[in-house]
Image 1 (cartoon, rainbow, N blue to C red):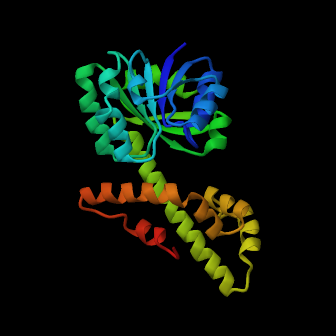
Image 2: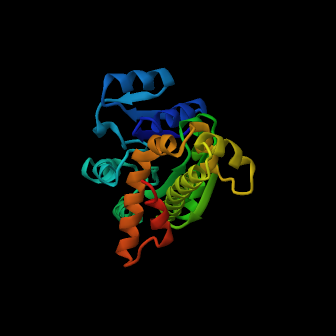
Length: 264
């Protein structure tokens, strides 16, 4: 049994906690309000009322918050990293800058703590099914050590390289995902010009050679606008991260940028 401390038991994090508990791990998770506390207790996890209770005695600390700043706040400013035992591992699920992962890795080294970035692709329903895709970056030994825990909710768990590589793959994935939504918007407009109803168009196209996962999701929602609305908050944040990361390299997203901005 692995002792896992968890920060960010929200839309994505709570089903992760549920899967960890159901797979026999001892889970303590931060609960900043009564609703979260109740949900964690129902899942069989031990709620922690304050961030100061997270880190000490953990084999793994998993962080699944929303922004880069929140990850830094939890891990550095709130002292979680400093409280973690030597030989433990910090897992970051939040989509953040690869440079932030590199910073955390450097900060963790004096404490003897490993850092693994395990960027996610999928939603709560994938977590509940144990089928969340995880892009994992980190040292071979550290990744191997935490993979059995990640498999509580992740399948496949794909080790894509050194520290920060998981984030880099996720950023490319989300840039392509957003560009595909833009292309679907252009396709819908072409269909309208040809006299086609958008819903009917996207009921037909998933069965053709142009099919892709984004198209299937649009078909389920009924329109590009409905699907874009459903994923917009998370996707906009991640696109801002990838644009900033690429800008640091003195480059841009090229044709992907054009597609991302199509009919927004």
